[in-house]
Image 1 (tube, rainbow, N blue to C red):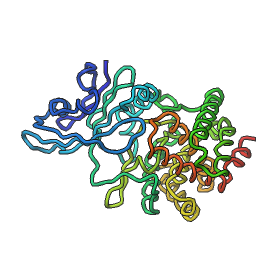
Image 2: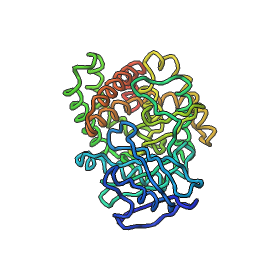
Image 3: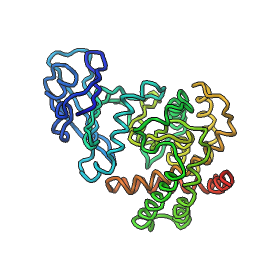
Image 4: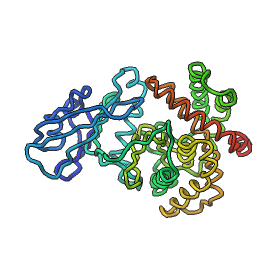
Amino acid sequence: MLSVDRVGGGQVLRGTRLLEEFLVDGPNGLTAEWLGRVLAADVASVSVTPVGTGQTGSSYRVEVAYARPGELPVTFVAKLPAEDPSVRERVAYGYRAEVDFYKTVAPTLAVPLPTCYLSAISADGQSFVLLLADLAPAVQGDQLAGCTLDAAQAAVVALAGLHGPRWCDPAWTDLASTVMPRTDPQSAASMADLARMAADMFLERLGDRMTDINRETLQVFPNAVARWLMLHPDRYALLHGDYRLDNLMFSPNGSVTVVDWQTISVGLPARDLAYFVSTSLSPKDRLAHERDLVAAYHGALLQHGVTDYSSDECWRDYRLGMLHSPLIATLGAAFSTTTERGDAMMLVMLDRACTAIRELDTLALIDEESS
């Protein structure tokens, strides 16, 4: 059986359909007949082209010609699992998380999202399809190039729309589809072991392309992961988990839309903030602007109703959150498809992140708060 949400005739239709009805075997399944059934519309033809450079999945732009033009969009983006079966098996939990996010969580938040027209997934989680609004002329952020201060400001304000509306909502502890649920000592120790494995794998494969000081930072950060995950359990929200430029779409008017929800988890909210700022700006730009960016995020949280959270606490959480950056980058490198751009991207992200960890004295702060 198959869990399906779809938008058709102006309504969201929820229910259960047979497995073969909406799932497709790769982009060749994105046919006019298939889209017609999804949209309950008379689709004459479609044109499908790859978009993006996803590490754990594939995305395609679907251009549509209708037999009877109406109010439906003429382009969509279809998101499908990775072509490599071994990658599908490793990240099936992420596919489930993203489908569940659009189906049950997204309507309760204020973060800017694309309209989701279809979300369907198989019982084993290894086959799924999301049909999303095409955000063109918005363009994907460039992780290698980094971003401007204006783009960073828009991104951190949008992030507050994820965390603020359901800040410390007890219901997050029961969200089964999160990749990493709220942490207990046993799971924190397991994550530390996984961080060690991922860091060692990365250093063995690409460590010779890093500076000595960044290799050292990457080598030691897993020692703090278990203690870090247990800090401030009273302060939590749903985390995007991979909140970075490649997962943000920027419109010509400066607005931002957030995509790729395969890594949702529950934890200290500023982990998302620290990950974005540390991996999206050069060390020089981060030093010049991070105080202002943290202040913009904090101010937006207050507008979403967050109380009893001072700017000083937010800054301290931002410093603590820096460990999220090498954790996610090395895990991503360990469990996703290896590509030349992916390797270059992870190296740039880790160069920026390791520098931030040292300059913000994150490891010493973790020692202080966990003592």
